[in-house]
Length: 376
Image (cartoon, rainbow, N blue to C red; front, top):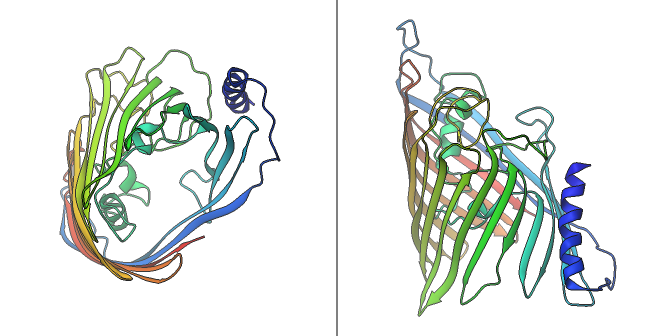
């Protein structure tokens, strides 16, 4: 109910400011989404030591990875020219990380000459504006590390004991976002979340003052062309107004020329206070919630891709140097468009991690995978 109140209150404010308006017709919802199915294998090259000094077990073998999202979305245009819409993203896998989460994102929005205003559970401008390194396979460096399960822990171990290779925050917290109109390809935006929950959805809408509360994000995005060159870039910053000096900042740049693309992105996080109070703000794949550890990291990725007709190939490198250890991944992949919305992909990769968790968590290995990506 509080979630609904947040969205409706924000939208009502904009509607009143816009004056009297009525919709020509009700919002009609449409279905969309994607399905990604991957099969591959991993061979461990080096293994770390367990706490008792014995060689840790490997993760050799084959596996299947899947990611499915179903979108329900729609919009309508009011008589005064404003567009009002809604978006809901459902997780389509047979199981989820917490065993309960089914709706990944949901939000309402109003857009017009003033820009766009969003309210609901969704990424802020930090992730919305993010420009990533070219990669035609749909699997990032972090996906490869998680696929390889180099943590030596349980199935969830790769998410909590390996430094992340993502250059975004993956934060679908309840928030309000404003994005300006594009001016020569340049847009600006700001987001506010009463309580951020990096890497997960938070069910609490109003919080007492505590670590991770009142998160603010601000960013710039550029999508333009200079002659035959296409330019996509972003620069964003995020912080929490909770009395703890916690920051995240990222930037990305991709240049395109014809069918060729080259570029990369960077994410940095820092904090100056060890007080976490069980909060998860910006732990970013490092340590389970509640550990009193200051997390600083430098994550960057670079890559290039080339397309010829239905064929495409890419090479991507990712690296993280953090207080929790290091991680890196090399990916060489290809893609072939079988038809509209149907793409076959494949890649070979190398990944390694070296975590600082009171034991030797070093792992390295090689692998290969193939997959089918369906868009609908």
